[in-house]
Image 1 (cartoon, rainbow, N blue to C red):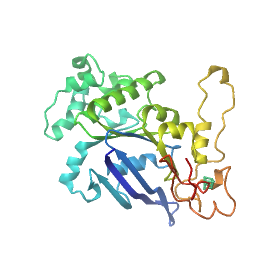
Image 2: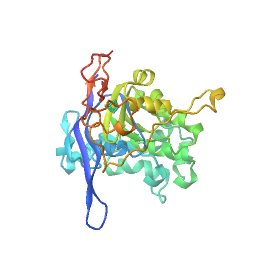
Image 3: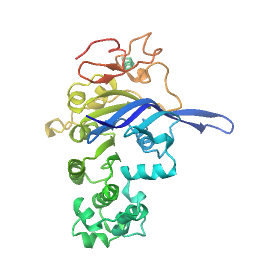
Image 4: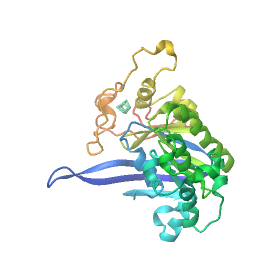
Length: 322
Ligand code: SF4
């Protein structure tokens, strides 16, 4: 596989005021290294507030990292001037959680989808793009306004706008979380279709590890700004190694209706905020497998297991695990 995007030791820290005179440093993203290969989908999974969206935005340079490097097609996007950033924006796009808030209510669907083409001085057929995202009949849909559409249709418009410029990389941030359950699978399979037709690589951001299994080649699990486990999706789901990944999977509802009333396990405690990252392993206050005297003091480094998966946990430090 050829890397398209390579983020190395990326951190996004910012200062938050916590009173009239005091402020604290929020470590939204902390020393993240991640590769997204061409035509690959990497799911970035974790609880709300763990830094997934900030990382996704940093990879598109919609927020400036505090440190680290981000290479796109072997070029550092952090050194791009305005002109090169504009070209990068054609090649790397975003689909956001709430399509309604990211489109003007005064523009028709046709104008919304055409806007990126106009900005970049490119030609293209709005109708054929609407057909690609299965918004038909395209002439009728193009004349509508966002408020005339269902949530699922609006998200398709947002996907149409993202693919208009034929990007190589799309950050899809919770693209189905505000869509009816009945439309979720359809929208994810549309993204899959577009990916195989156009060779797009995706970073699929989600809090739902169950949907990540069906829509990704690899899963990266994020906890409090850091990546704790990265590996092939089937492997991470069938045989999770990090205690946090195990906790996320144990909390997934059982699809079997006979087990509807079975209690789901939850991860104890709450996700701390990024201004109060615990010392040692950030997960140690919530971890049922914490090793006393080590986990609360020493931060685990990523260990590469024989299966090609990386896990940041003292249970695997220095071990040759399959
Ligand atoms: Fe739990 Fe320790 Fe592993 Fe952190 S390093 S996940 S506290 S066992």
